[in-house]
Length: 99
Length: 170
Image (cartoon, rainbow over all chains, first blue to last red; front, side):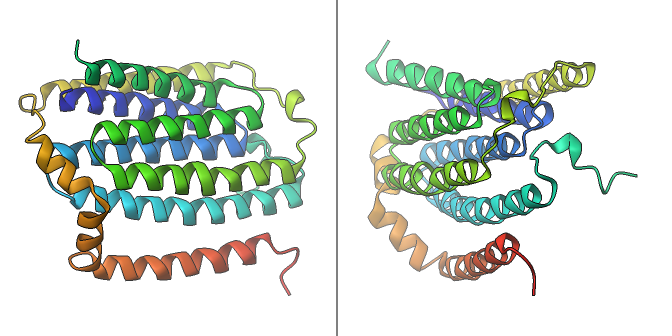
């Protein structure tokens, strides 16, 4: 396989994640779309790491994964706090900061 | 068509299909399960790139830990009115989908115009780079400081999550 196939696959999954963030209104689905985007970037990093014979890309994936774990914990805690206050996870109804 | 190409296309098809199901399905639990499947497929793709260590921690950390947290929160929230949560197709969503399609065209254009089509330098080198031994050596020598900083990040995340999810701030 050549590198471009991996890059195009990663571009496609990244765009699917972007579409999910832009179109869905359920906070949890938006959050899962963000995970999709993080993972597509991870695929790019691993592909470059393998094709260049350099471990730096895989190190970066390791740190992205710890970041994703931290982000998931904090983000889901925010969603729980949101649900406790507004009884909904619909992002269109969360408009207190809207001017 | 070699066996590697065949495996890549099967995994790529499954990855794109499950990613679509994540954003298209109405039920968040089903979406989360498709996302777990997507992470397993990505683990397989990492194996085709000879990144064994990353493939294993992808399945352990993402499919194992993070998605269990997601499912746990979905169950905890008890979204009984989820099916009535209207997700009608409006002009805003159509515009968003069109913008995403534009982004896809741009990204593929960039990939297509990148210099040449690099081949795998040497499979032996790629296999050496992906092993736990090599990653571990790099992690505890060259990347020791970022590795230690990561522990501070995780501590901050623990404190933040506990503070946010607590019933009330005293």
